[in-house]
Amino acid sequence: MYTTDQYEGMTAETVDIKGAKGDKINAYFAKPLGQGKFPGMVLVHHAPGWDEWYRECTRRFAHHGYLAISPNLYFRDGHGTSEDVGAKVRAAGGVADDQVLGDIEGSIEFLRAQPSFSGKIGIFGTCSGGRHAFLAGCKLKGLNAVVECWGGKVAASKEELTPKQPVAPVDLTKDFSAPLLGLFGNDDKSPSPEQVNKHEEELKKHGKNYEFHRYDGAGHGFFYYDRPAYRQEQAMDGWKKIWAFLPKHLGA
Image (cartoon, rainbow, N blue to C red):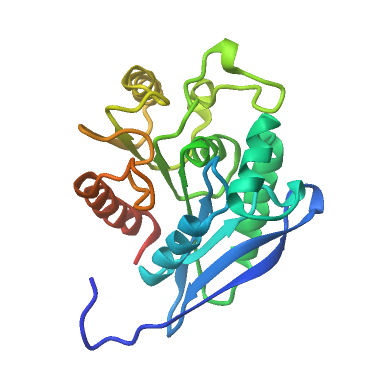
């Protein structure tokens, strides 16, 4: 909760980090200034790319008191506009899951090395990044909270699996190790309401700590204020859910 008399400040910059297999990649890092320790958040960008929306989102998390980092998962595919690089990567079938997980691990290590880090880390992702965030919660240790926004192909069919994405994350639910917040639009096709139902059934079956919120009148990408999919009322409520969920599991 912000008050009008408090100090407020942040720094935000592009940094180099060690990603999968020790590769150097770039990332966008924003941190609050001031006294105290801050939880960390890794922001996993969506299939359209490492774009301006994710830069602004990274600063938004810093504004709310988090050390926030968004790694460039497409770094190895060359540089240019986010649209051009994203199109190139999608045409090649996306990024391999193991490489994404390695880049996420590198981001976590970068946060752990910050002097103002509190010791708690969460992860946030939308679209393919939502899938990656849930996958990280199944495969990586040390996460304290996961925010999955309309994660596509979490409950993928066998026909949708590829060498780069060889598993449906829903099949790993028993290994999921952090509290989960899921936000979904009921008009979405990927994930469809039926896929979200399957996702939730597995979480219930394995006794996981989760909360799902589903929004009528919203489809895929309803947070993206720079796209026609934006739905103001549903997006604002979704952000309220995020700012209520994270302090419970990461601290203020």
